[in-house]
Structures are given as C-alpha cells and as structure tokens.
Image (cartoon, rainbow, N blue to C red; front, side):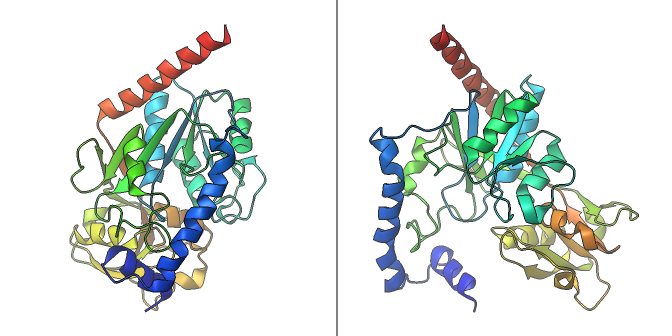
Length: 335
C-alpha cells in the first residue's frame, strides 16, 4: 500500500489516526494562524483589483468538482451580461510569475486546470503564485468579474463572493484538520460561505445540488470520430484519471455498463507516453483534465470524457444578484 493510499484510508475509510499525524495538527494550525494574523490584526489588507471577485474552492485537500463549477459559472455570468475572466495559481505548472494564457501555453508550464478552463470557456485566464497580481492582468482584457479557481484559504486576496464545493460522497472525511484529516480549515468554516455546493449525492440543508454530466467520448487524436459514451457499454477499457478522487470517474464509467481496468494517478500527474502503454489495443478513457496533458502523444484508441456541471438556474441568478448588489455599493462609495 502506497503512502497516498494509506493516508486516504485514514482520512476517508475510518482507519485510526497514528500518533505522529495527530501530533502535527497543532503545528499546522499554528502556521495557518500565523499566515492570517497580519490580516486579522489589520496590519495588512487583502488586495483588491477593482472588479468583483468570486472565489470557488473547497475545505479539503484534493478535488471536489470546483473546476467544472468555475466553467459553469463563467458561462452563466457571460449569459447574464458579465465579461468574466479566471485566475488560478497554476498548480502543477512550473511558471510562478503572473501571466495570461495564450494559444501556446503548455500544461507543464501553467497547470492543467487553467488550460482546460481556457479551452472550454475561451475567456481570459491568468495564473500566478500571487493571485492578486495575476487577476490584475485580466483587467487589460476588459474583464469586469474575476472567478478564482481555488484560493478560499488565501487571506491576501480580497473577494466579494465565496463558494465552497463539497464532495457529496466523501464530505469532510474523518472531520479532522491536516494532516490527521483532509480539512484545510475546521468544518465549522463551511457555514460561513456565501454559497455551498454539493457535488453528487443528496445535498444537505442549505446546499445547492450539482451533478456532473458527460455523455460523449472525444478523441485525443483529431482524425478519430467522437463516440457516444454508451457505445462502450459491455466493453473492456482502460480508465485513466489523475484527479483528486479517481474512483469517481471510474464509477461513473461503470455506471454506464463499461468494464473498467482502473489506472489511478496522483492529482495533476505529469503524463508521459509510457504511462498510457498498457500492452494492448483496448480503448483508453480519461478525464478532460488529463487529456490536455496527453494530446502531444495521442493515439487513435484514446478518448476523454468532458463533463459539465449542472446546477439550478436560481443558483446562478443568486450569484449574479450578489455581484450586482456589491457593484452598486462600490459605485456609491466612490461618489
């Protein structure tokens, strides 16, 4: 059993927390408090960039569906008359200086999720370890609202709306803070967010339900036709996923009647061609996030399954209304 598998069993499967992990919790709490202290004491102020900011994130380490929600938010805001842009830290990429992605941006430089978001939305996307500096670059592109992919725990970046996504299946795991559990902040913080979105299973009181829908397998190689996902029913395929919870992707394929040989990889894994060499000609199905890193060595039997976040329209209406109310307050304050 790998270290990652062992940690996941402790966090999500009920295994006992070893003493050495429990002993590190006060250290993590102290470091987090030190990071927030200058802002709590008023010694430093969160940076503002002059346009409203929505932060989409989660309380736990790993994925919960925030990137599909970011894409859905961008599309919904654009449909309501806004001109959105997206900012991300660019996790998994080598670049640290703020930059706006272009057609030549590579996942190993700017991160897989920013590349995916730009490809799906065609809006300006900026990355940088300093999110405020990166977000400021978006204003040159006419952006009037910024959606931040992650960053709920970053006190240096001012925001107008906070949206937290929770995995409906795994929730908060054992409910303990890092490293004894998966929580970046205590679970009590969940109640303070403007909106709480539940990805998957039945949402709890006060949560907005979100489902991930995907019905088509798109080819990585451009000369291969797309196929309905149901066309793979009854077939044996290789499933590839380098996301926070790979089992969610594999289970979604199995629910379609597909026989999956699962190949989980660590989140944000930097794929090489050999990673997908399974010694046979079976179809390979992967997530869209993985596909942006595998396109350079694509084969004809490799497909990705794009998913879209499905949420009630009243959720997007409420987010847009909160942005509009905040915009009005800021305009009055400047007069």
